[in-house]
Image: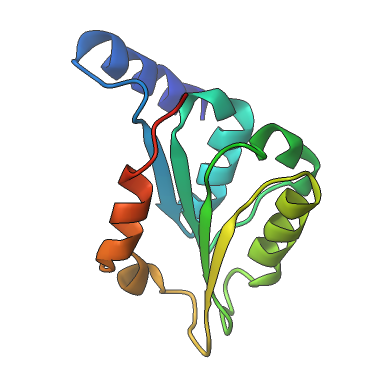
Length: 130
């Protein structure tokens, strides 16, 4: 994760990047990485979309102001949907306003449904970091 952050910082420094419009998303292990990177540097991202992942609820206080839309399948046998539900509950407890979509009966591979939905991209790109 440290190397990924260094690469992101290098890309930002060397390219014309709108630093108010940096987003993070990932699926499965990348969903876990999305939570991890948010917990390490919550102020860097305008919004986030973790898909079929999970994070550490102990760190959600840092994330209460980050717009997050979480996706999971209710029948995910690889990463239990409880991992996302726990993050939603923890964020809500600290005053966050996460959006949560759980696809009824869907397994682990809900990223196709998620990333092919134009509403997801419209939501994501509507945010700017203040």
